[in-house]
Length: 111
Length: 114
Image 1 (cartoon, rainbow over the protein chains, first blue to last red):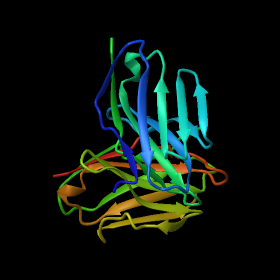
Image 2: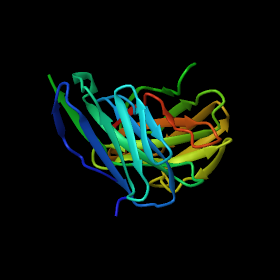
Image 3: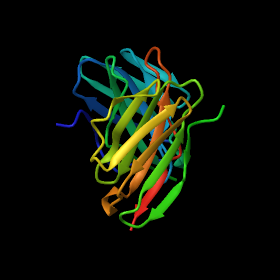
Image 4: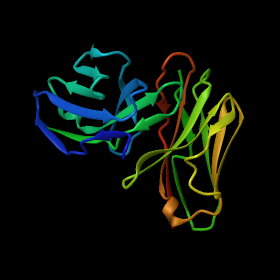
């Protein structure tokens, strides 16, 4: 059983729509949650971090965390073609420093 | 501030050759991570260091792989002998201790073993 699960997609949304990306994790002791964006041929780039239940907003991005249900999501409002990328969910459990990554969701924003 | 610096960006070599990948973490970061990314297996953690000391190398696939961190600003990942199945993108990432700090990735080395 994979520790961090994401829908692999591809997920396609029209420009201007809200893109919703979901991630579930298995370790209830997980404390830190990150979303990375990876363009094709590039390295993962941190776009959001969240540590407590609820919503965290940064510009067009909103991360949502529900520890009881063990899921974390990323909403992208007013999606742009430049948001087309693979989005990786990463989870850090307790005192361990290593991150466990999901397999990523490929997002395509159609002009 | 400079980010994580990796070299070379691309490496093409023949099976059996020794390959050395290099990484310079962000100044002040005391954690360094080596990852491998393939289409089939995604992003896999190979090994990580804290204050230049290897902490967990359980992700290193075989004895052909080795990693060192001789000082706080330099690390190497070596494959000897290399095999075609080692072809992948290898990323180095670093983070700072304290709290739940995220990892910052270098641009990666795209390795092709012929």
